[in-house]
Image 1 (cartoon, rainbow, N blue to C red):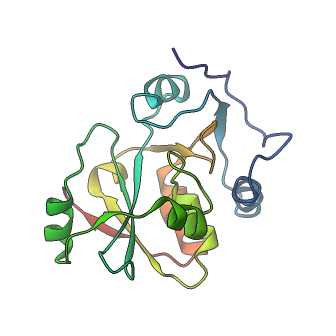
Image 2: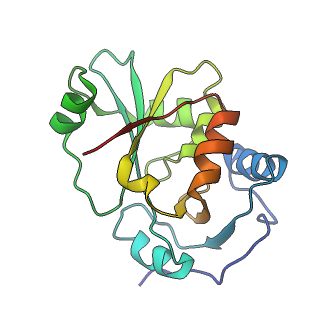
Length: 179
C-alpha cells in the first residue's frame, strides 16, 4: 500500500521542482487555501486511491495530449475512474485525433515528469499554447484533488478556486465537455 502522510496546510519545507515552488507561491498570492499530503511516488490512478481517501476528495486524471504534428496541445482533466478514449475526446472537440504528448514535451511545456501532469503546469504556459479541457463531471465536485507538480505531493483545493481564480490568473479559459 502507498504511503500517504497526514494532512498538512502549509507548503513543503523543501521544494522538489521549480514548478512545485511556483504552485505554492501562486496559491498563496491568490489566497487559495489547500490541504496537502506527501506520498510515495504515485504515477497511476490506482496509486491515487489512498490519496483520495486521505484528502477526502477524488484525485482528477490529468492527461497531456497533442495532435500528430505536435502543434496543438490539450490538458484534459477528467475524473479518475473514467477510461480515456482518444476517439471520443477528438470527436467531442471536433478536432483531429490526438495522442499522448511525448515525455520530453510534458517536461518542457508543463515542467513535470510522467505521472505528475497537473492544471498547475499552466503556470509555465505564458503563450497559451495549451488548451485546458475539463470534463463536466469534475466541475460537479466541491473539491479538486491533484498533483502539486510532483509525483510525491498531492493537494486538495476548492474546484471553484481552480476554475475562477487559478485558471483566470494563468489566462487559460477552460473548455468544458461531456465524455
